[in-house]
Image (cartoon, rainbow, N blue to C red):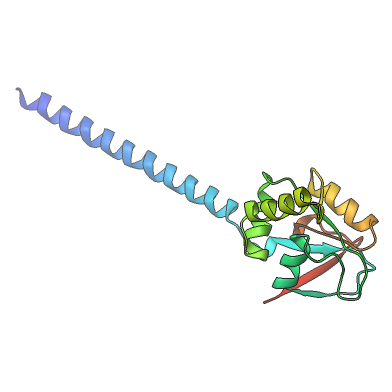
Length: 162
């Protein structure tokens, strides 16, 4: 093989290798940027309540009992109206895992058990966070959860005692 042909092949391979490596670096950088923007921040999902609810903080066990539909009243005796997003909604999954420390299917099993046994009812399901915010704000004793960015002055933010 003539020397000029061999030099061209080596140069072309070096260029292709650098191009391939550069593309992979760009792909990795874009992937990391996407992952960090989609990262689950447990602080971005919060519990909200109707303004007339006199509670500022709920213990995790109390929150689990209320969202599991085992506790039907607030600590002061007022009736609770629980609002949730659909099981497939990513905010519902993040709320269940991050704040309640249960899996969404465990909540569904508890709700189905209560409904089918006739001992309780399922929470009120809404389609969107905006709808959930509206229902909690307009229902005395209402309780739900949304991303922090959806909150306005029409509801009270509840913290979780750890």
